[in-house]
Image (cartoon, rainbow over all chains, first blue to last red; front, side, top):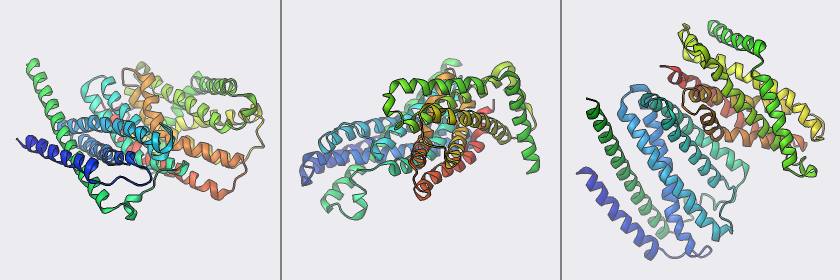
Length: 217
Length: 222
């Protein structure tokens, strides 16, 4: 029931966000129509970070408490996070082509997103290559902790390395009110979608565990 | 504190003794690092090799480092040495620091031999002492997470691929900082340009030495 309410809310917000992005918000002067992709890219990037923060918290709680529900939370969040990181990279490339003239450039945010993606791919690989499930959960929790702590250092190193992204314009009040509204609604829509997907994935995983237990009895 | 150090040194001494008797890690890793340098020499035009020398150095040291790190726990896994180590009345962080210092010293020995050879092969300008500091800081970074992931990878089904998959993405900040810093040194840059990269590496080293020693016990427990 609760998940259905969440699903409905996420649907409504998503429709509102689409309306705002494609009809309401004015076209940006310099970048033109492609700038609208910004309202997708920022929420997706934010979700990737949120998902990996949940992985980090779930991993610590699992190592401390040894309750499998924390492991299920971390594992499910990592899967959703990987999907959104992949989408961020794809959408980022689509945006970069008309704006910078290239699909890919070793720009700090793109580079750190790619490194992030690689870390969490390794996180999921550790699970599938571990000897048994509880060992996989323990190892993955360690990678989830180390990986998340690594993110700020990767961002720092790549930013010092080179830079040409349109800066943190959002925080300098450089964004028109209508654009800010669109961005916020879009972020809200994607965040509810994330919790929706996370809830579904956890439910699925719990059902799997139950079936396995039944078949063993 | 003194007791802690004594236990760490005991594990370190065990690794050094094993290495002196078998020469399993340092020699093979050194030869591998030299091979990487030679192959890079063919991959780039000979005139342009001077420009990419820093990159070649760090690719060689990272790849060779990952090879040495994977050996470190494969040797422990043989004949149940790791179980013996875990039966010792010491905490997980003692085992971690013992193994870490061992890996660190083997990687440093390799780096100390590789550096002058690279300088001769690529006709680089005279050696600068700052380079030693960069190598030490970067190698501590490699050994800190490398020891943890080596212990992790050796227990998985695909240990050869698991270690690099975990190790490379996590150490990207160290690789970036080391390449940049040694580039600045070789071009005769000032210490102020250099200090930011040294700080990045030092921060990475401290953070991951602490975090790795805390989570190491969860890797080796059965």
